[in-house]
Image 1 (cartoon, one colour):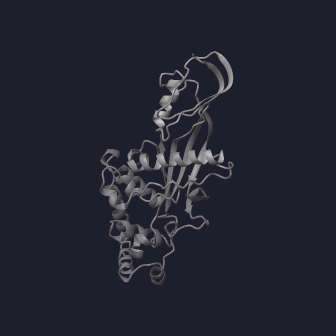
Image 2: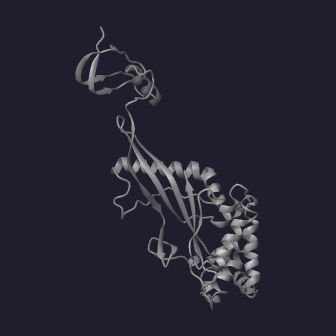
Image 3: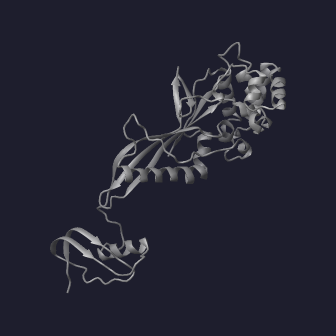
Length: 328
């Protein structure tokens, strides 16, 4: 006999082996429960059994529509706005040495911050060269690691000139620019970062029923930011982002959160990302702490321009924040 019920709520518990006594119904019922006995049913089999039992031919419920329930931004890292500048800081609001300029550190200060006698000798020698020579060395390095496709080193020249005369204002690589596309096309961004961030936000919403507590308490996510080492400047797939940015310090990610009406499944989509990083020379760029970054061409020249050559005129050689915009 066919027992066909129109139910307000259907609770189906299934397993690998089960018997369905009915496939058609016309009775009205508050709840229908179908049980089966075999344990450890795979989810894909469970879905198939449910859908077949409901007579949908294995297709998703057409009434289970996806509804936009929230949209907003989440952050990682900390920064402040100061006289039109965006300055990266730590959780306590302190800026790193790569954000300082024109301070002319003494040999005692350099030694106290991890520089060896060789590092100090190298800095003293480099800072004795004329500014024009150091500018040329730095610009040649940035141009040399730029792509031909962007205008024979256009991005390298632009970011070098901004360091020389931009007075610390932010510098943006817009969506669609070569550095933006290098990040967007890399697996560490697509597979690791975006997938991880979407999963983190979905989990948070399921647990908290919100992403950010309020517009003034933006959620600081924990998903690891992608990293492009300076050594990857020779990698043609990521050479510009590795040279101009490297270790990303901050992120603003725009998201849309959807919920399905019937299944209540939650889905997050990231639609825009902005990465932030300081373009400036810190202690390690001068060779401190055994980092050996001074062997990368142009870094010690940049260190000397930023910390020594502008001691009398601090309008020059100011560090700044690089912003990389990515549309998804």
